[in-house]
Image 1 (cartoon, rainbow, N blue to C red):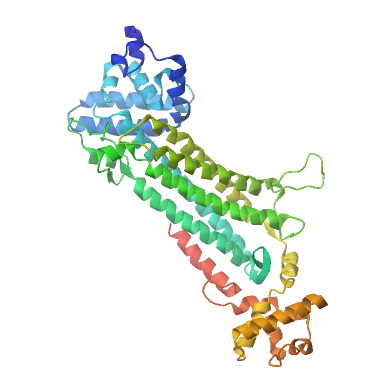
Image 2 (image 1 turned 180 degrees about the vertical axis):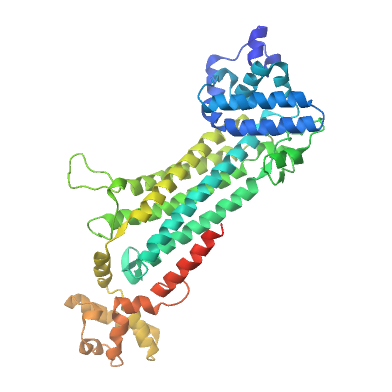
Length: 465
């Protein structure tokens, strides 16, 4: 191996032949990790600043390094930077270019650190910024849900269990159930951010460094709460990536459940909602079709994100301490998870405030399926009949209604009294859909009054984020 061959690789001094061309492509990560360039440069600037403060670099050397890194950042952002597979990754590409621009001082930047702590730092910085973007998208979606829920606080629809009509609820109440799922997701995201916000920089390859570094300084410069506490764990930990992907898998599961309902509700069989045309597509052969492609695609992408979670868990399950090349495989699943969750939240955040409720089909559907049967049972209990006996009485009245094609609210008082003489005229107050939802007037209930109170509480929570 010639000196020129050696000089291409910063680690090439002990090798006697160049890297095989296929192996070079196979082991390189620059095609996908170059998106870390901004955070890699920020980490290097913090590291150089610290090295100067402890006397490892002169102020002039520090300034040359920072100026060189900032010019590289500009070139990358303007598309003028040439990435090299031969230099393997984002870190070595930037360091090699820095040395090319400022000379031997560029070779001093890597003093007291390794690519192991460097990449661990970069990923944490990158993910932290992306979490902040995702948190805003989650909040925007929740605001959209509150907007529709408030507008539809009194809109009656059937509530389902087993996809069978169960009890009447309000559309606003149903949307607030989605809101609650996303609130838990937001809390998990913030927990993840707290745990990842520690700086691995200074852990070096695995054991720390002999240079008099100041890890607290670099942590503060990069906005971390503190340095990580163990050098071995610092360079090999990917819990934060797994935890984020677990969060993302749960968000996608919640969006998928909502998507399934949107797809059902938008069908001719339900006709509960209209999705704006801009969120749908047509058929190449059936001109009448309006396909809910956005919720269908979000539902489909859920499997993709769940797959990334399994990939990361499997990636880490057998790794001995400390860093292993396996960890290069953490980035593509993580990056794709970030991209996917941002796109899906954006799609939902745009779509939800624009959907329209078809109130009449919702109401008519709620009238079918004897959705106020439980209200009749509760009515009988309040008149002294044990619940199990009430259950049987109502069951027989429902059977009669099925045979006669009559809902409970459509039966005459005489018909109802055939099943229990305790039933009186006031029963019709609880058999109406409006009476049923209004009666559930407690925290968490579907009564319009409670829906509006819940919305008020939720708005306050969002304003405090």
